[in-house]
Length: 586
Image (cartoon, rainbow, N blue to C red; front, side, top):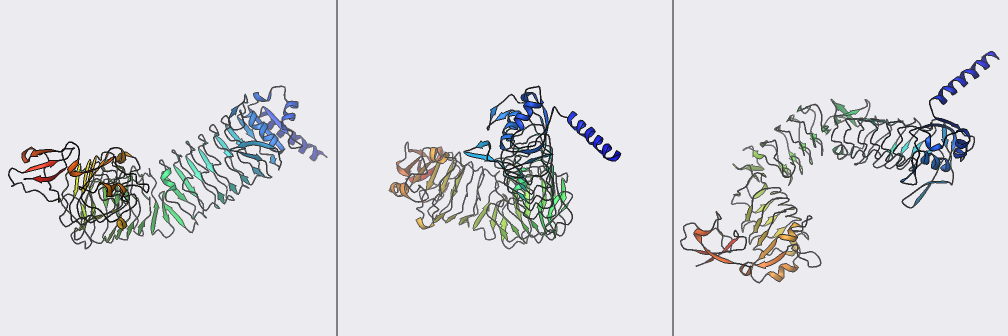
């Protein structure tokens, strides 16, 4: 008897202590009765309550009332509610047909053991929430836009986290996902502006590409021992990430000094954007730099590749603004698209990139927007470079990359092809492709600042979007009439629309109607990709000028041949921009 009495007294003392922590302590016997119970036990208006603990069953009617106490009704209708702290530890959610929220045409009702979709959506005043211990799911947008939420803990029994569950919880600094959670839906942790550390439990196998999008202060992410579906783009969205750690025992990945590797260490997966390792030697076992691996590593200054390295993959070093020294190894075989891409319009800290003799595969665009000169070992059997740092294939028939800092261009006379993205971002004002050039790859002049491009008679095929983003392009002279079956349908389409607004296409006499309807130069409805199509000898304001009056360094005749400077008294036709010199009058 004495023992039972002592237990009862202790229970009452603990209960009184709990009650003292909150403005309101509510114990429910039946779901749907929260509002009437609150009105019975408090002398104050429920809108004045700043902290509340609830135990017992709750349903949709109760959740609607809780939202009202939190300062919001429906999606965004404000109320006078002042609730800042909500403790539902001893509450449990029961199924009910009562609608607590309508969102985008959908009425939401409660389900057993679910912290339901939008339960606390847009409750921007809430600072602390303690979830029911018996829930197994946190559903879609359950905490979305709880921008003042600073403290909450996910119960150990939760197995599922829904779409955008914590979207916009911008004041949470730390979030730990329990070990039973195996399913994390898309965008669960987006725009948690102040989140500094995210720990994933052992059952989380994957996150979507945009899972941590907008988490601009996230410094540490801890991966559990079953995490296996790595997404290369995911970490691109965390600009402050310093460490990626992996729980020992994970059979798929491992980490060393906060850098993520495949389990066997043959692939370097993620070098965090603000890793403290500013001068980095890649471990000897590594054979492959994964896509985006060093992407936006803004503090990285130098990298040394091991003898084992074979492949540097897509956009691996994109945005490494401080990288001034990269030492590539003999044995390196391939560089993928954008491997050393630079930010368009910005000078790279790399003055030069030296390619070893063993490189035998370079994707078009491997040096996208790169300002560094490319130097190739003379022993390389597949590639060569010239004194200007321009990259070619070994025979110099294909121009592979032109450094963006080059302002005056002189290509090898043997060139017959332009590789994809070869001139991307270049600052060459006038580009002339002579008659022997036959092939132009996708995005060849992407975002170049050229104001004039000339295509010679020999052009046979043209890839997609070759002048996309060329905001300064004013005139395109085309001496060729490329074959329709070799022309990309959107060869001269520009997503920004600048080419269509301001660039004039000049064609040979009698070819206007052909080009007005030609695939690649016009869309499927016959609308030209250019502001106008004009014939070269009928352009507005054509004038004649003496040879000595021409400011251009090189002068070409109608067939694209250079006019010898020894010619005396030659008269030429100058097109409207004063630089498109094309015909000779004797």
